[in-house]
View 1 (cartoon, one colour):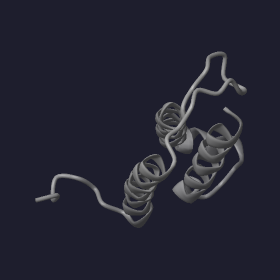
View 2: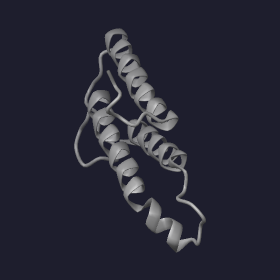
View 3: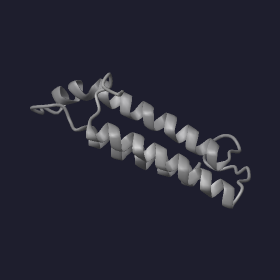
Length: 102
């Protein structure tokens, strides 16, 4: 069924994290309905809004890293492209920051 996609461990973990976040946010919303809040972002947002914005930014960080990996190997004189785990960790940290402070 998913043979068309290149499933690697980081890719699978990234999608599992997204699914767990969606389930967790749904349960949290049912237990404690959200209210609008003005944080670091230039607009008032709910938890769901911040999750959506954070997931978009996380996806762009990962895509940008994949696009620049070979170039970064040249910049830093690496024998091979840097691991995608770096972009995964950075994107999850940015996502957590947006959820907390956004």
